[in-house]
Image (cartoon, rainbow, N blue to C red):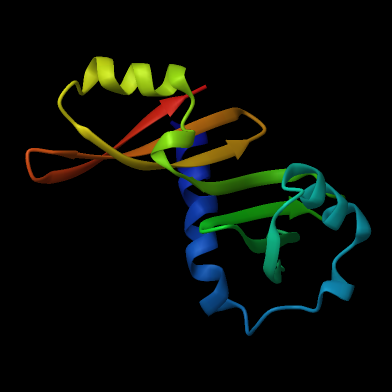
Length: 140
């Protein structure tokens, strides 16, 4: 439960960091280790903005791969803290889709967010079932 709260807290900081921090930082202010870690994880991503989160001593990056948005946070040494990326329905792994379909047989799968931490991957799947929208989590 504590890990889940921490993950929610980290994701909430993504949502509010732009408002709490007065603007982005120049890419030249981002350590080479952080840039290299992001480049290794997302080699084809187009970087939109870098921010520095003073309280967490971490660098945040917003990027895109095509239409998919990516948000990631790295320590000052380039270690991944958390990343969240949009994933289209067709790109969700088969084992995750099978688990969703087993539990929600009649639901329409709308897409997902892939949330990566040191503890593993959580798939936040968006569903539509009987005119209502739901999100479920599948942990890997």
